[in-house]
Length: 259
Image (tube, rainbow, N blue to C red; front, side, top):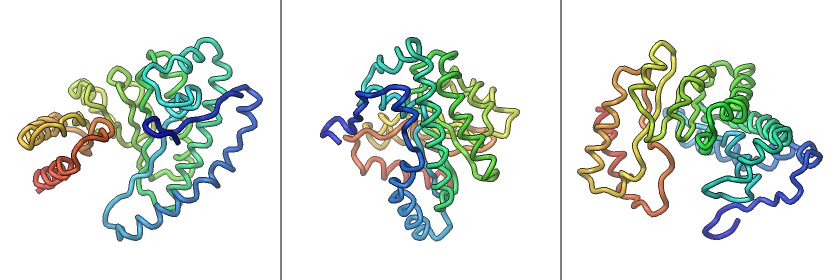
């Protein structure tokens, strides 16, 4: 872990042999603290609030593994898609199975819902998105369905507005949207499907004053009227310099709308 950068991954030996040697079951054992915390949180929630489990998508995780750290362009991993697709698929296959096991353990620990978070699927063209991102999310969803048919599954793909038709073909319960999505278009795509929508307030709205937050919140929620179910959410994660009191104000306003 490096200050102001985040996790750094040693990928000097990113070969087919190295990828095949990765032990996903050993990785699951190293994540026991996550499952223990889910059990603790569930106990505190007293079963009257749902707990959402979480995992990064195989494509998003591979972006960090190939690049070694977070970057804006992801040129190494994108070039691998074209230069060495066999290696890319080998890595994604390994991550996908590991991610399935990780989410299964979260469900066993008490997660009521699971969400697959694809922060970087939107950097791919549609053809490449289907092959290198969506395919592996489908693998995870289908594996979960084999064992836990009733567990709700949410999928989020940042900058995915043009790919919602493909995402909606997954056996999922909700699609989470970032703030750039065309909500009317998305509603038309999912209107005959039993899929709820989640989203999609721009996190930058929280830099504004209270009037700004309230106005944009109401505008955001009004767009989702008539859906097959709606979960309010920010369109992506919070930025580190957003004032916590502004988030608190947003939450209080949401509670008032619910009433």
